[in-house]
Image (cartoon, rainbow, N blue to C red; front, side, top):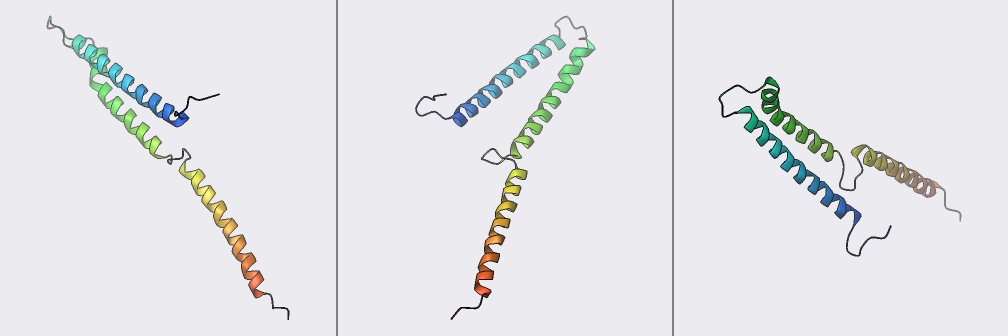
Length: 114
């Protein structure tokens, strides 16, 4: 798939992600305004219990959802790999380094022919 010059896949992904969150926020605010308007009728009657439940718990659910999303996004590094993959790569690199150091030590221990 050809990309237009000057655009990157990560740039488009970030743009879509930000657009998604902006639209989600606008929808959430609209739903909250509609619920608050319906929950406080002008006639003075009490709103249905479902509306009261939604109005009272929706902010907490939204806050917890944002917290979980942020926590999960922090588990990934800047390259998109998670910490476990980075740790496994570090262990593999350490093993390669140890093998090379052992080869160097063996070469230095051999008596010089001469």
